[in-house]
Length: 514
Image 1 (cartoon, helix red, strand yellow):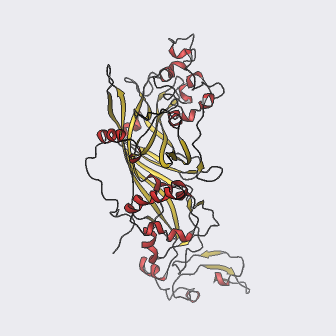
Image 2: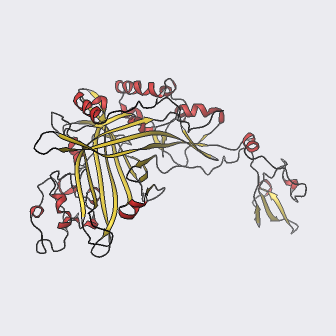
Image 3: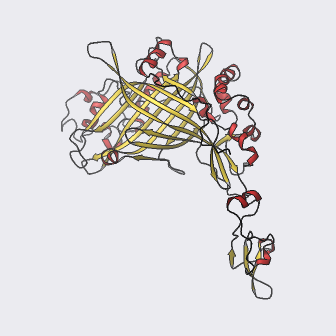
């Protein structure tokens, strides 16, 4: 978990306290640009939480102040409407389709256990509108002695494929994806110790029974002491309080039934092992929860210069390819890769048979390498790399998230019965870069992402399950930072049918006043 270094700032942020969320986001980025930079101002006060770091106490009288100063972390930079932006290193900066998606689905006529290796493959360019909206007020998660206030950011995503109409220069835009959900900044942990008020209000409290043999040990008149059974100096068993235990061995513990004021102060304290979560609803019938964090560079979480992507042989990494090891790998491997910055191998355009493809590895993936969008059809994130050509990227923040982490807390995916039966969705991984681009002496934020969803369907020749990657990548900028032509295209293809709810309206979920 990351949090602001200065504890005082967590409860007293002047740039938050003076403005509503709407006003604040209209003026804050302007002031940040005029000073030390957008991402620098957002990230320079964060550090990784350690067990020895001080934990702030929660007091009811501070509730409104905490809610007003909720922390959104790097997610604050997402506020606004983002749209496709790509010029592939060209000066004209025309928008054709900045996004690339690859989709692999079961071939018509197939079912689990029938002829293996038959699948439908699509790879298209797409345009996108992605809107983020900060949820006012901290979302309060109450866990007794532990409290967490999350900064919530709603998102809505609309995607349309871009295809050229035959015998025409006209482009056709076809809806292919809708999604909405919420990102959470998992920070602001508090210790809420018991008080005399909470003890009496939240359940009531029973007086010690006059028949209790240990009634004299409870000085308050309530069973709020832990008792220890010992053998005293006379060789008899008796209960004593912790105060009178004095390091003597004990035979049994009689736990307290009631709390004392201050209970919970000594922990254990909760430290989340991830700083960001994403929950999403996808209309194909899946809901996702991803957990992740910022990746640290040599100088911290704000990484200098542009993201680094591979070239040539180094680009052959299965974690980012639209084919998996279980698909045969096109007959290649990481020790004998295909150079993705050269023309495809000759066999890609040959008729394959048992002589030139004895293992049937190439026939499995031939069409992917022969696709007009190659090498993006094989490794889509190379489009992100090429979209950065000619740009001056000052710095960036790198976020990695997954539904299936190697250690610690786990996210997950739930599917409707049809998806579970035929195209089980088992895992989703996401990489996201928030970048500062310098153009004409001005800072512009840019967003790039790669997300990979793994499907499982049908069997291999040996009965094994095949993993099929579905990949989406795109480069976006805020709508005010793209050309008027691009703005007009987005407004034409993604019309707003209704006015969005005011971002200053209360969400209703942080807490109840009354």
